[in-house]
Amino acid sequence: MRDVIIIGSGPAGYTAAIYAARAQLNPLLIASSVEPGGELMKTTEVENYPGFPEGAMGPDLMANFQAQAERFGTEILFDDVVEVDLKGDVKIVKTGAGETFEAKTVIISTGAAYRELGLPKEKELSGHGVSWCATCDGFFFREKTIAVVGGGDSAMEEANFLTKFASKVYVIHRRDTLKASKIMQQRAFDNPKIEFIWNSGIAELKGEGKLEGVVLENTVTGEKSDLALDGLFIAIGNDPRVWLVENQVELTEERFIKVEGRSSRTTLPGVFAAGDVIDPTYRQAITAAGSGCVAALDAEHYLASH
Amino acid sequence: MKPVEATTESFKTDVLEADKPVIVDFWAEWCGPCRMVSPILDEIATEYSEKLKVVKVNVDDHPQLAMDYQVTGIPLLGIFQGGKMVKQLVGARPKAAIVSELTEFLG
Image (cartoon, rainbow over all chains, first blue to last red; front, side, top):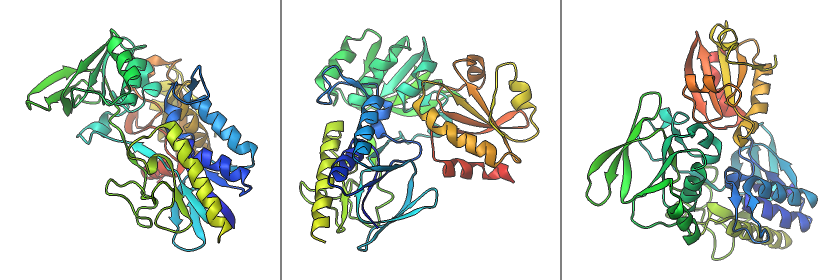
């Protein structure tokens, strides 16, 4: 039986692994088969991670996290956890490839998954004009007219990035102010290719086989209008990925994993949670990393007393 | 069988006229998620070689094919049968999830 299994490979998971490995707990980190590295793998330049005054590319940063975890003996498995049983003293974790692992403690750092608009045709048009990943799909929109929906840092980053390709980028936002950090806002305001459409939501996606436009709905007046578009990038936030554990640990009202105070302790002994899956507020790489550290220290403490 | 790299010229013979269902992987070098899916498709090509064929299309080298099928997001797995794209999966997903989407073509 293992001391610690860490589920997830974003900043929280890898930081937990670095701390657990240095505490000689020989952690196994299950990284996922197709999304190892988490959210930062989809970003380009990360400018606010301390210690990198010139900034770092998201994927490079995550490769460093992984190398640091491996340096101290973390075992990494590129597979998906499909089932867990966390109730007993022996925690059971099963993977997509059919392996079963046992551990005394489990750290859940499964992050958050992008949110959909929830409109008809959204699925059918995804890959044909509707996208969630600017760095993956921006290339297809050279000299096209596109829009980003959302008002946070990711929406601003995507909009700025997409102006490298597109001739015009609209930012569609439900309110008349942005949640994004001031520096990201200013960059978007200063970009001549970006135009803001305030107080507006998307009521309908139009197009057969390929996105041709959207119907906007003004959130103040209710008035509807058409906007012709070749592409729409959705950046309206994320939902915590809790399906693995939702029937075993207690969740908050907003469906994040509930932890005790500033600790990472969930409602089950020996089960800890860290990163975006517990955080409705900050959701930064550095806060996730800090939270992963907390989880490893809490797991170490638990193991010492059990 | 290893996946076949199709070109704009060979697409007709490689895909449209194939005698079994074909999974076409639209991908590019710069696409991180594509690199995660690629080895999964190599495995599928080998394990299910009797039932289906796997073909890769590099959208940088063959933009016309991406345009013909209105592909604006990758990785996109298009499943072709009888010369038509009958199903599509957008975005990287685990092997088990891809295989379960292929059940109807595995007879």
